Amino acid sequence: MTRIYFNEVVTRDGFQIEPGFIPTDSKVALIDALSLCGYAKIEATSFTSPKAIPMLRDADEVMGRIQRVAGVEYTVLVPNLRGAERAMEAKADELNLVMSTSETHNLSNLRMTRAQSFAALAGVVRYVDGQTPINVSLSTCFGCPMEGDVPQADVLAIARRFADHGVRGITICDTTGMAHPVQVQRMVEALQAQLPHTQLTLHFHNTRGMGLANILAAVQAGITRFDGSLGGLGGCPYAPGASGNVCSEDAIHMLDAMGYDTGMDVTKLIQLARQLPQIVGHEVPGQVAKAGRITDLHPAPADVNALRGLAS
Image (tube, rainbow, N blue to C red):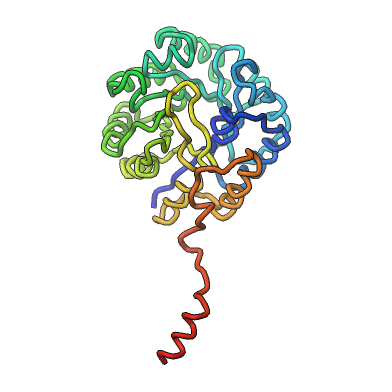
């Protein structure tokens, strides 16, 4: 069965909209624990302005304290050239650049037009000059809550421009959970045909309950890399109605049960998910951590055994 690779985004995308500051010690401990679960990448933090995202003001300290595990790439979100400089000083394994395929969302989120964002990020790519791998995450690829449909041709054109600039990977993001499986299949087939040598990742939200269905549609269409957030935490602060990311343990449990090779320690991952409410101070959306794996069985009630005895 096909190998599927997962990237964990909880300590960046998941934590960034939490109302109370999560202590640096908790972030470092969680990343260190996640590093032992089999992830391909962990998006540890963001080198953005502390004024913009106070939750991640400890980015330098987090990157300096985590215990890096061989085989895991520690990626960071980078909004601009200054962020790239800080990330490279922190020896990030990958820089993740972000812009939106929707003009309105890009203006709301980044205060720039798409053309301005592309020019700025292309400048970051030139500055890095191949020293560190670069991934570009494209937001609202399956729809914008303010504009509605985002033409697939726009997504393909922006992705192609970044690929032509030499970035290693492109992440196609369903920022507000507007995607459905048929749309996902069309999108990923077109992307794979156009960018056969680019590392493609899909990033889904479960805003309307279709996150796992969309992951399955993408897998069946040939995608092998996905983002997920432990417990289903996260959401875009600049996108109305954008509730949490697809839950990592739910998605990995599903694919594991179906026979896909995820390379993940699902039992260890569920244990971490069960600790997450204590870290953030509230319940989280994930389901498998509450219900257990489908292979977790329970003893029959005592009266059932008595009935068996009577039947014999």
